[in-house]
Length: 420
Ligand SMILES: Nc1ncnc2c1ncn2[C@@H]1O[C@H](COP(=O)(O)OP(=O)(O)OP(=O)(O)O)[C@@H](O)[C@H]1O
Image (cartoon, rainbow, N blue to C red):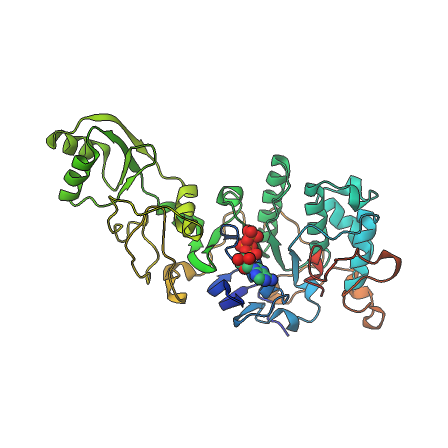
């Protein structure tokens, strides 16, 4: 039996697809009560990791656990984990309500749950419409509704904001935060930090299948450092003057300016004056999280050449500093060598999650839901279906409502926990 903790543990997960190292030694933990963002550029290995966690891909090495168990040992996984990997695969001629009823029957929850989850995701008025006519955003909501059918303790969503309009994104944010604050676990992937920045409490940032950062978003924010952007009359002379003063975090910008981190603008201007360099423009720039994210992940496809002014980044400043354990390479503009091994994950960030203020407010769990610590209870009605009458696990919903061709259990509407 699983431990009911709501905890996701990814331990040294590795997946090699022939020559492609999709995921390399990835480790992180997601605690209940939080929304965790799983972030990285296209091809970073996010989907592969989630698919391994959901038992859809066999790891080359390592393990993914939900409630202390691999997915296939969860019993009726749809009651533990709801997942959306792709908002695809709905039968186009099936109404949203019927789609949900098929899956409700497959996991042994009553038909009435279909209407409940339609309401939950804001599709209450669209239950009689065929899913084939849904917009991408509506399909995202329907996929989420499917994932919620089993009233799961853990939600795993791959790029859930795809196709949502701004109102939909705001709605999803509130929904996921409320869901987490009711004591559940939410893991969402995205390739855009900005998209989830206001939603997530902690982040796992991956690049080229490796962990670049794992910890609270607040700590990542604290690592930011402002830069001074300068347009000097003689760049080489100013760089030499800065380096003579021990200033090494200097970057050549494409527009001809140089960016200097770790020193105030006044010091740069004074140094320039002493060196006889005129300043045509100077500006203090507050680093934003997006740029830090880009710097952590840009190695994946970066093709920029070496920066002629590049020096070793300042240790511990957090601005360019990679996690402890990182083996320093000659620093290149826009390029960060990834860390190797689990020790690259910042140790302090693995500490227990602190419940955010307002915890237990917001999302109201289904009646009958109990805190995981006291044993997870399926929602009322679910247990009304005697085990003998329960349909077999939802490999394929039966009969005339068979999924469209190309459907694979666990894809698309994998609210059944990847095919349960
Ligand atoms: N079945 C597969 N066979 C071969 N290579 C694969 C397979 N699945 C994924 N890959 C490769 O593994 C790497 C990671 O892919 P993955 O889909 O996990 O990344 P991602 O971070 O989810 O990207 P995106 O944001 O674009 O969805 C990519 O290089 C991809 O081409």
